[in-house]
Structure formats: C-alpha cells, structure tokens
Length: 327
Ligand code: 13P
Ligand code: SF4
Image (cartoon, rainbow, N blue to C red; front, side, top):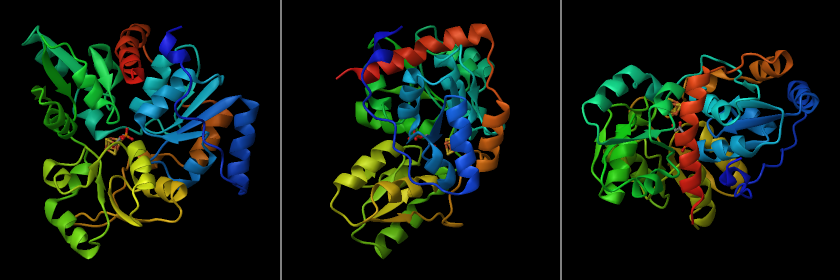
C-alpha cells in the first residue's frame, strides 16, 4: 500500500454528539452491525452530520476514505465524492444514500469535451478539482481540492502549460496566489455564484465587526470583499482562532451547523444573496436520514465504476494525497 495512505491521521474521527431519536439510533446500530463508517461532508443536513463518524471537507473526506479500516463506506455527500472513496477502496462497497446527488461543476465538464481540449495542446498538464467525474479524473494528471489547490499548483511541473478544470473561480483564485497562468475551464458552482458584491457590501455594513469568510468557488467580486477565502474545513480553524465573536459565512448553508457545533460561543451569519439568505445545494440536500438508514440496511445504492476508470483515476488522486502530505 502507498506509504502516504498509512501516514498517521492529521484529522481524527470526530466523536459522535449525543443522538437519541429512534431513526438515528437505528442508523448507529446498522452501522455497528455492518462495520460501516459514515463519512459526511460539511454541507449535509445537521441530522446526518450528527450521526457521522467524520464530518469534513473534500480533502479530509478523501484522506479518511484512504485510511478507513471499515468494511463498508457510507458516503453522505455527492456522487463525485463517493466515487473518489470507491477509487481509493476498489474492493469495498461504497454506498451513497441518493445516487442522484450530483454537482453542477461535475456536469459542466464531460470527459469527451475535456479530452478534445487536451488534444489541442500536448503540453497541457491537467489539474482537476475533485468536483468532477471519475472519467475526468482518469484523464487528469493530478487532482486538487479547495484545501490544497495552491500547493498542488505550486508543485506542478514548471515546463508544462497548466489546464485547470472545471471551476473557473477556484482556478482564478489559485492563479492570483501562485502567479501561475492557467487555462481555465468555464465551469462554476451554481450555489456559490449566487453571492454578489452588492449583497456582501450590504451585510458588511450591517455587521461591521464580523469578518467575512468566503469559499473560493465564489466570484472574484465577492472574494475581494472577504477577510478570508478558504475551504470549508479551514473555515472551522479560522473562526476558532479569530477573536471575533461573529462571522459572515459565504458558503452552503450546511456549514453553519458544523461551525455552530465547533464554536458554540460564536455567532455565524449566512451571507445573503440578492434573492434570499438560504444557499442550499439541492444535490447535497438530497440525502436524508431515512435514505441513509435504507442504504445501510439494504446496502444499496452502491457506487460502481468500470475497472479501467478505477485504475486510471487512482493515480492522480494518490498524487494529490502524496503532495498534500508533504510539509
Ligand atoms: P470543500 O472541499 O471546501 O468542502 O468544498 C466542497 C464543495 O463542494 C464546495 O462547494
Ligand atoms: Fe457542487 Fe456547488 Fe453543490 Fe458543491 S455546492 S456539490 S460545488 S453544486
């Protein structure tokens, strides 16, 4: 096994919060019976976060998936995340409570269109944001998440032309920090592009002492007003360490539960858009406690991938984990 995958954990399995409703207790019992692990993204509904063994961002979830000794992985997130867990664990069942939980970024970048663009420049080195299909990962050189994108780009070969897919906003943010020009795929997250410069300026005026924390999938017009731009997991660290008592959060609404759980003495204000203050990813919200119970009980829906994709997509993910683990 790859040495990186055996490295000591940098983030531990989170202890469960007390849950006492019958459905959550049934899930915990099924989990024990199947020797399963429940991995949940920060955007999952609070009830799912509270029964999960680990809650985190895409990077932390991939690291956990790479190391788990469990027999079964239940992935409470979206399809590309569960696929990543499957690629790292080809011999284990990986379950996703709702198999229709997709992602607008993944949809924007079909593998055949990416392959056609790659053919226009044999010197392209393709860096794929983890929010893409397994087929796209299989034809990419390295994967990144919002938590390690800067490091991955800094470590890319200097003599290659960088092609960054599929999030143009994350790609532009990394270029600003690394000064490394990249060809950007024109994809975006339909949730994060809802925040506007005007709406953030308004909320800043209403809460003058509250730092604004934004995800790099937001547009530049929003990022330039933010005090901190980072992955969802780094939001937890930032808010914990910053002495401020209130924060404006520009990312998907599920993050507020995680932050309130980690920093119970602080106030988290959802950043408003022009239309409403409730930025929920419809894909992330497809998973429910009932579907989680059913998938554990029936061991379906299971994520399955063709053998050639499993094999080819593993290398760029392992390359990401290896670069991420470097000091
Ligand atoms: P993180 O890796 O920062 O949690 O981002 C995942 C995601 O889908 C953001 O929209
Ligand atoms: Fe995809 Fe955006 Fe939903 Fe994240 S929040 S899963 S990027 S659609």
